[in-house]
Length: 249
Image: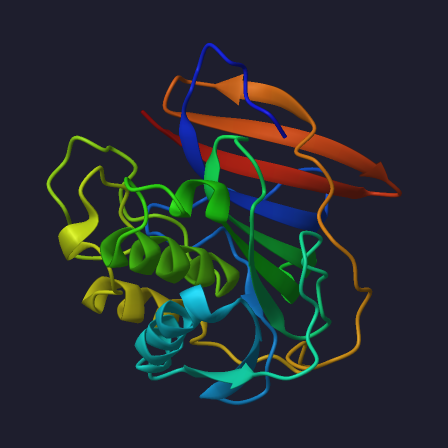
């Protein structure tokens, strides 16, 4: 979706497909509502489909290694015949990661999750080469931060801090204008994952068959406080997509 020209802002967004009228409230911690992958044992292994080109492979490798340091989950890479392209098709039970020139639309990266109730069934990560091919963002620090953060969203994490003026927290889940020390997860991220996945489920959505698809546009804005915004798209039949976007000046 194109942002108004008067803003000229960049955004890192989180898009969520929900079987509910409204999303669960984000808690005082940085869990993403109550959304999580259903599984019957810990640690569980989640497949990350590598649909990026060689310019992103090393950063995806770092992200997979970083999040696999968690005690409750492991990420494993799938290569070969994958769903590349701008659509970045969702694959049931997995997370598909794509890069492309998505255009001057205002965002660096978008993470999307499909959920049935509170259970994540599939996810996608898109990183926007329109910006990452520029001198400002074509750095290891920016690429690591965005890749790490968007993958973190697909695991059920929200941001630790959304104030760009605060000191860096040493985590990719922290918004910053200077990403040097915010390229990887920190202890609080791993602790939060342990809290999210402390319980076990009677069924699993990891690697299971669900409806595939891609996230449509963000829909209409229903809230904007100048630093973050909420968009909604009603899909009918009790389905809605909520798009949470943080603006970077």
